[in-house]
Length: 300
Image (tube, rainbow, N blue to C red):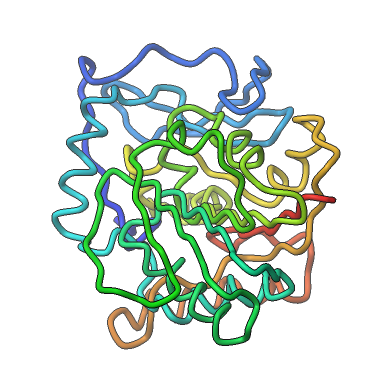
C-alpha cells in the first residue's frame, strides 16, 4: 500500500480507543456531511466531507491517550519533529512569502514546530536581509529541544496554544499540524494570535483527490490514520474566512505545497510528487496535488 505521506504511519485503532461518531463538522459545526470512503474497516472509520466549509475529516477521532502514545513513538523516530526533508529549502519558501514583513523585534509563532529549525532559518533570513534587528520565536510542541546560542534570536517552547493566548505575533507558522488535531478550533485560534499587519502560513495535506483517482485502478493509498485526521485543500482554505465571518484578513497567495521529500533519499516518491503537482501551475481547477499552502495577512 502507498502511504499518503512519508513522515507518518498508520496504525489500527481499536474500539476502546475511539470517541463517538461526529455528527457535526469540527471546523464549522455543519451537520451537512457527505460520506466518502473508509480509512479503517473494523471498527469502521470513514472520511466525510463537509458540504459547507469543504473540510474532509474522519468521522471518529482517537482518544487523547492513544494520540499521546502515537506521537511519543513519532518523536522517537523523527528527531527534529519536522515533516520536510530539506528544511532550508522549505524555510526559503515561507520566507519568500513573508519577505515584506519588517519590524525591529520580530515575533514568530511556530505551531507544532518541533525543533524550531524552520522558524530559526526564517529568523536568520530576516536578520540577514535586515527585516528585523532581533527575533523572538515561540514554539508550540509536545517536546522541547536544547539549542546553541544563536545571537539575536530568542527561542522558547510551550506545550499548548493556551499558554500564548495573550500574545500577538508578526508571523504565525502552522505547517503540517492542523491535520493532526481532532478539534477544529486551531485555525480560529491561530488567526486570533496574528498582530496587525502580520501573516499566518498554513500547510495541510490534500490527498483525497489522489486517493479517489487511484481507487479507480484498484490501488489503495494509506491515509495514515490516526496521524492524519483531516484533509484540507484549496476549497477549504479559500472559503474559511467567509465561513468564520472574518473580515480583517486577506489571502496573500496560495498554491500546491512544495514537495516534502527529495530525490536523494526517495527518488520515485519525489519524482511522482513533482509530476502530480506540475499541472497546478497552469490550471486553477487541478487538484491532484497532495498538499496545499496558503498565506493570510491581517489587515491594519
